[in-house]
Each structure stands twice: as structure tokens, then as C-alpha cells.
Image (cartoon, rainbow, N blue to C red):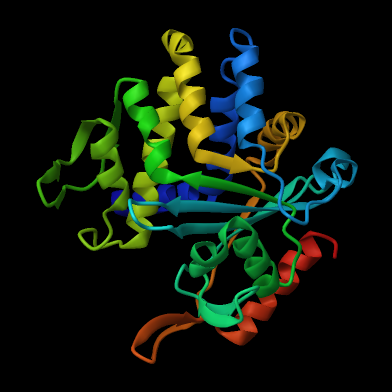
Length: 308
């Protein structure tokens, strides 16, 4: 019974991780508004990066409470590597219905890479052409417009853990990776330890699902500590880390509106997922091949939610 309750809690947490990441970033950015407005404004100027084919600001759907979509790109950029999008989550939001749908795209999904004239793993789109190619590829794959994106360099973003003096999490499973050991129970982590903790996959029998749980734990712990009054003195340092590792095409005004929407949508979130596809090796490379019928159902669901 206890195990079932744990799985139920983990499932709910997984449903909220995408919007939680975005709202966490909003919180981090807006944290010091009252005491360091200049730094917040400077950070927003740095992270606000419109796409090449960006809409005019007056046409942005979030400002008119019309349905809109967001692509969350969690990129693991390492030295001598352009990086691949480790996490690709598409969220569609319908403010009038006060509903939200969230779809996690398997990173090994085989699809056409728009602008590169190849068929490859969908997470390679970012490596080939950055955020713009990733947005174009996901939009083509799902046959919906992508209005907003949030890019996070996960390795750099976790530097904020050292800025706040480390974090403490409740680890639900003993894990070991090389010289790093994470016992079950309460664990205190610095930035490097948290980075390894967030990357572990093969040592966890839950695979990617277990990694997502740990990433959520880290983000929650960072935001909980960052929101304490004593951290206001370090707000400028935190904003500097965000400015170096986050890019998005949300404006400051839209971030405020997004925070308001999160409160309304918190209980009205539906998770979509690919369940009927299968793994297949093509020319010695492993891909995830979506089931065509299921893919079309997902496309129709998102299009209807966006009123397209």
C-alpha cells in the first residue's frame, strides 16, 4: 500500500515538473525585485532572447489570455560538446478553460530535423541548429505552433546550489556513481554532487523516470532555499547564474502573468505520453519510433487545446 502511495505521488510530481521548472525560474528571476530591481532588469535583458522568426510582442498569446504553447529545453552542455536537449517538454495552456496539457517527448524519437535535411533523434536538433532548430523540429513533429521556449543549461544552472550554500533533499533510493555515494534518506549536496545526482540514469532501476524525480527534488530544494529571507543578500549572485544559463522569449510582463496562471492551473493539468511506440535499431543506431495512430491522437489533442 505504501509503495502504491509513493508511485502515485511520483506520478503527480512528474506531471508538474515542466511548469514547476518554468515557474521556479520566474521565482528566481523575480525574487529580488523589491531590493535589486536594476539587477533584475539587467538579467531580463540578458535572458530575453527572441527567436529568429519571432512574433510581434502585441501578437503574443499570453498577453491576450489566448491558448499558447511552451517548449522547455533542458540542455546538458559539457566541455567540448555543443550539447543535446536532455529534456524536451511541450506544454499547451488554455487560460479560458484553465487547463494545461503537458507532453514529454522521448529524446531518442526519430523524426525529420527541420532545417538540417536529415532524419535523426529529435534531441539532436538543438546540437545541429540551436534553439531555433529545436523549436522548428518540435513544431513540425507535433504539427502545432510553438509560441514560447525556455532554455536551461542544466550544468551551469546548478551553480546556484553553491551560491545558496548547498541544498538538502530526501533521497528515496541509495545510489552510487563512481566515487559519489548517495545514501537513502536526508542528503546534503553541493553543486557538483547535485549535478552528478541529477545525471544518474543506468544505476537507477527507474531509468529516466528516476532521473526526472531527482531533478525535480533538486529544483524544489533550490527554490525553497532561495526563497528564504537570508538569501535576499545573495540575490544578485543568483541572478547572475540565471543570466548566464537561461534563455527564453518571455518578457518580464509575461513572466508575471505566467505566475498568476500557475496558481489557477495547478489542479487542472493533464499529462500526455507516448506509450505505444517501440525501440528500433536503424543502421546500428537505436531510435524510439512513435506509433503513428498514437502520434496523430496526440497532435489532434494539442491542436484542439490550442484551438487551432
